[in-house]
Image (cartoon, rainbow over all chains, first blue to last red):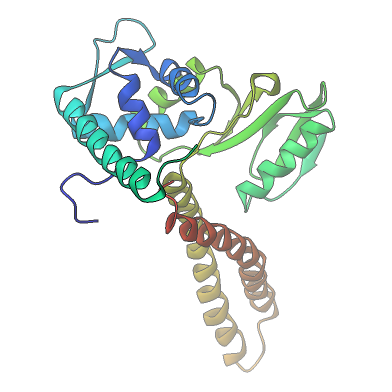
Length: 104
Length: 178
């Protein structure tokens, strides 16, 4: 897609949200599970791959590695990506509700 | 207990290892052909395999540490192949839940199988032509080159199966984002 801000995958969106507070991988997994009431269960391999990509893009950063469990936190760039995504989701949501006249 | 299987299609092996676990036989050690099981409580663990990146020691250590901190236990490793397990009572266990990584992993395995198939096909056919080009047929060479062709046939079915799985995932990606 040739959009300035292409849609995020559900996994990436939730990982970014989870990292508004510093968390390690397992913490991300648990929070995402909780936020989505068990609907989104991310595999450890998938989270690890996503973390690597997000670090490369500068959307998240690793905190100083004191223990064996590395913690990550979202960056300002990451936050602006999430904000654009929320706008996009709102557009999808508003159009959906407008045309279907809402769901009960 | 030892069982022998060729690790050509790791997904099929994974299913088999999980079937064995359901019957109370838990994977303990493995090589590309020999699998050692020990008796345990039936269906108490879910097993998953993964393939490590070649030549990236740092990434690998970090990844394994990450899995460990997620409560995932490493069963055994043979070359780049690793088997992991997690207690079944802790809920469903998958390493990869996104289709793009699954497709990427499948592609890597398919490339590996395809290169083995092409290599054996090439050596087999060139060899067979050579075996019959002399006045007396080279029967030893003939046997070896027929083995090359057996490998081609043996590896083609798993390749086809992996390809079908990958195509199905790709078709789903046309409609679903993940």
